[in-house]
Image 1 (cartoon, one colour):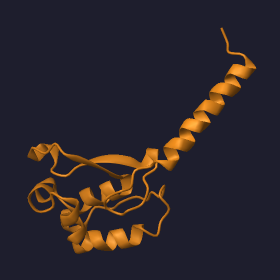
Image 2: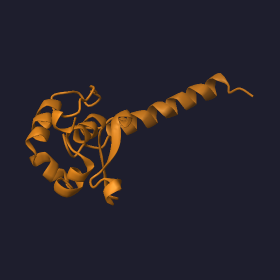
Image 3: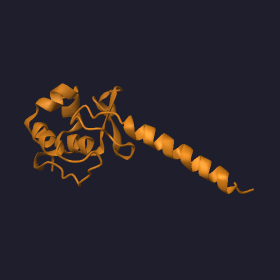
Length: 117
């Protein structure tokens, strides 16, 4: 049985309210400080799961991919187990400075660091 026109309009209005509310409550990326749209959220294990980590942080997808392009899982576990430690690394600091000028939904292909190739 199909929904009537009025019922469809009511449902569409309800979804619009949900999406508007969700957009205004986007979490803030702890790495770059920009709001994270729902389609750009990635959970980053501060210590990789392969190294026994469980704690996660929600990051922009581009920020998350950049971290894994720069560091091995062993390096992340041993030297960069916190957001503050990551921010102190010069390559991460340069990336943060660059990405902060981009809109929250910005995405670009990330290339692996020459050091990790």
